[in-house]
Amino acid sequence: MATKYYTHFVTQQGGKARGASPGNEWSGVVELREPLHEPRANRELRALLAQSFDLDSDDIRILHWARLH
Image (cartoon, rainbow, N blue to C red; front, top):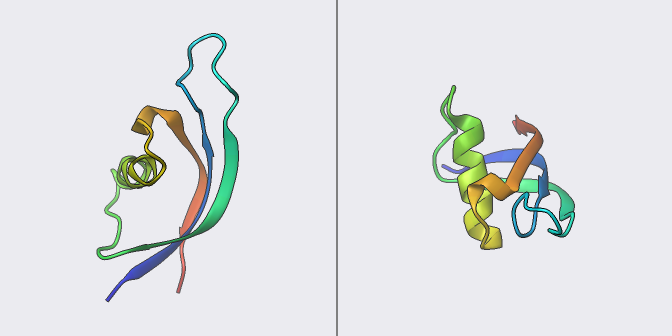
């Protein structure tokens, strides 16, 4: 059974280099096959979001996430 999470995050297009565009702020529901595992949940979620946005995981900053029941 899939696990759903509410996520609120910022993408940093082009990394943190000088002159990089400021990126965008996003929020929404992410559905995962397996639940996130503490303490690496932030890293797992960043990797998944980065893959979806074709970015490096360092270009994703999670502001908030919570499991939906």
